[in-house]
Length: 292
Image (cartoon, rainbow, N blue to C red; front, top):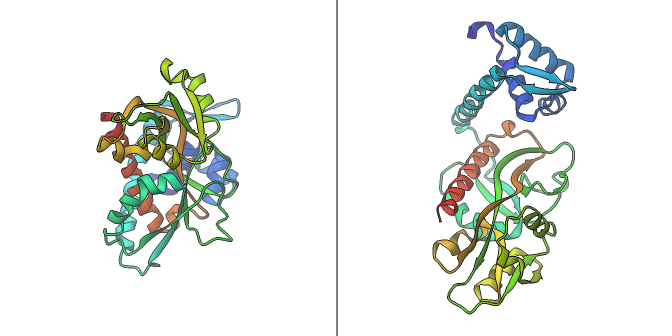
């Protein structure tokens, strides 16, 4: 069977299934839409099955298509790792510049970067703090870690890293003010949580104090000024050392973290390697705060 199939057609199928669009797959692969459609048709003919149902101009995976996609999700990352191992002997630039939102950088990423930079990957991560859109052309940034709460523009390649989760925390060792500490950096968060009824009734009765950044919310919370609603990743250490305690367990806020690049990830083995490491780190963190 394998000798009759084109690896190229499987790659095209993988991209269409990943992005749910022939148009998007064509953009990512730098080919025409007709080329993608032709490869899909050839693959279906070779296999003798339908991989997609065409419903109102939308592609929906069939059950057999879902099975093949699941196989591809296992195979292509393995190929990435294989290609990485082959390229380790190549001379690479020593630094990969990453832009990251300030609080997640300070509270979660920086403590982990020390370990990454000790992995003998042949390069190290240089961190710049910043948020919002990234102008890769005019800056020295190679990658950016952002949440998908804004339009990052056309021509940007992205890989999802992890879903965002938020918690409500307080300092249990100090007398508490009935104040809810919120950040102006996420103006829609309060509406999302209340409309989805994800906060307990007591917190809804608190007065609100809005600060500029989550970092300030956490610091205010540590001094006992109120209960902070923040990203779970940002208070992982404080929960672990019990300087803060949960008032509201982690809940998904419908946003997620994505790694952005101006060029395809597969073209730079360093980007693939860092992406895989970052995904695992956030998975480990999710497991940690889910177990609290």
